[in-house]
Amino acid sequence: MELKLSASYDATPEEVFAIVTDATFREQACQKTKALSYSVEVTESGGDTIVKVQREMPSDDVPDIARKFVGQTLTVVQTETWHPAAADGSRKADVSGEISNTPVTLKGKAEITPSGASTVQAIELDVKVAVPLIGKKIEPFVVDAIRSGLQKEHELGRDWTH
Image (tube, rainbow, N blue to C red; front, side, top):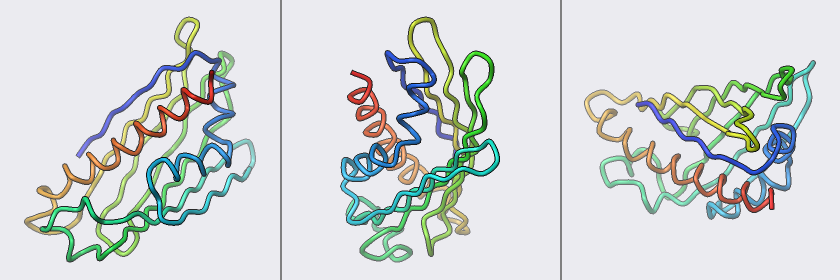
């Protein structure tokens, strides 16, 4: 199931990139999404910047149909590989992730692009729940949970740009 989300910031592409690759920002985003525990790694590889976030989340909002697959908590692992900036400061990233020990995966792209005096951060993900028969029924719940987390992260990002 596809998820598309974007946010606009009153900042340059360089400033938005600095925020989304800042370990403290990512830690605050984990706190804002009520993670029970988390770890954040920001590393360099060649010209790429890799952001890996692992967070343990309560499974309270998981529908009953999926609860037997996940237990009391979910461990969400997300990796973003940000590539070098283009001449206009824009950047693209490959995004991948999973909910550990479940059949849930996500894969997609993120972009930071200038838009007049502001900058847009956009993300497109394909979320899959590889469970015969009920996977398609669970995907909307997973997408809604991811969307909610990304929206909270975008709100925090706006706070950081002011």
